[in-house]
Image 1 (cartoon, one colour):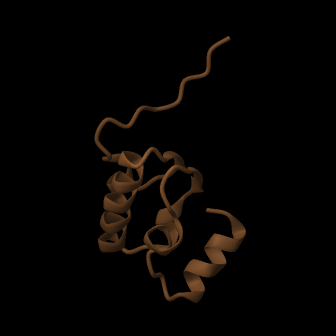
Image 2 (cartoon, rainbow, N blue to C red):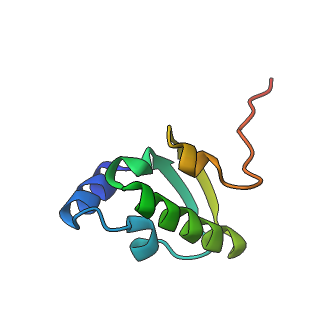
Length: 81
């Protein structure tokens, strides 16, 4: 999560930043978005991510959260020469 987004999440009392600020057809790069989210909010974020993916958004997420890693059909990146 970018510095601004992390600060905003804390300032909003941990409200789900993904549900509030993200719209369709975007490319989103997230670094440990679960850091400011309870498990219940992570599930809500996962549902919102799904909605955005079906609206042609793409996500690159660095996470340690088993909840976020459970996204169906997620594919880990591969780097080839």
